[in-house]
Image (cartoon, rainbow over all chains, first blue to last red; front, side, top):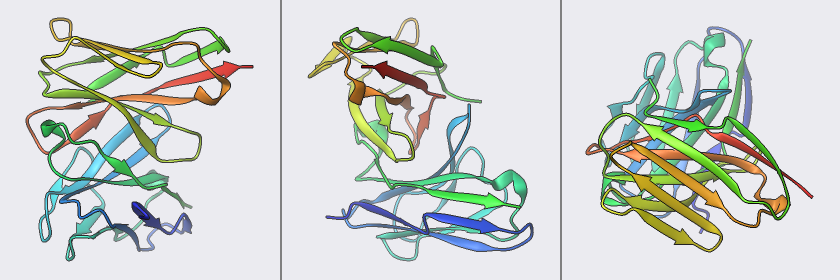
Length: 115
Length: 110
């Protein structure tokens, strides 16, 4: 099994450009998450999904949109990139609620730089 | 604001020594989880402790939880150079989210 796969691994954007990050999981997990990681800030939740066709806002959702059209895929979109969105983005998935003792499985990350 | 805060932010020890890192959180939790992140990689789950548990072991890892103080500690015994990584606590409250702390960077020197 591949687990959680993120594409691309690296990307450089100019301010105002748009892009989509793709996350795919092959574990039949219901829950999927997008986090961003910045130095000294730990991981902050951007958006998440509790099942196909659902999305919800996390701690820092502004400037991002997501879609979960298929159970195995969770897309993160930046409509108009800003330098403040320079970060490392991690996708994760879990079988069900973390509060029900489920652990998260993480992808290897996407390093995004916005110039 | 962050739910979890780790302490210390950075820790340097020699191989063979024990490493202890602490996590404090703000609200009541269902469980607390510890993750490890090697440089440039994704996070990997280490251990989960439920709110009604006080201590849990997994190999060289020992986790304690004090819900009255809203704190947890992760002890790595007999550290190895391969344990060099960042360690994060994450708390699961009665929602669909897992909220991470700011992490402790552990450096183990051979």
